[in-house]
Image (cartoon, rainbow, N blue to C red; front, top):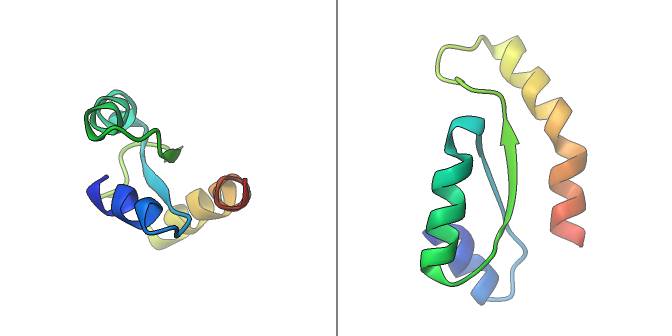
Length: 71
C-alpha cells in the first residue's frame, strides 16, 4: 500500500491488486495513510494456484485495473 500511495503522490496512477482476503486490511491501511487508493481484488488464495489459474485471475481483473488506472 505504501508504494501505491507513493506513486499516486508523485502523480503516477497506481492500483493495488490483492486477494480478497485483504479487503478490510487494505481499507484500514489506506485510511491510515490518508489516501483512498484504487483497489482491485482477485480470488484468494493465490499462492497455490497454477500458472493457468493465475492467468485466468489476471484476465478477469485486467479491465477493472485499466478502468481504475484511467479514471
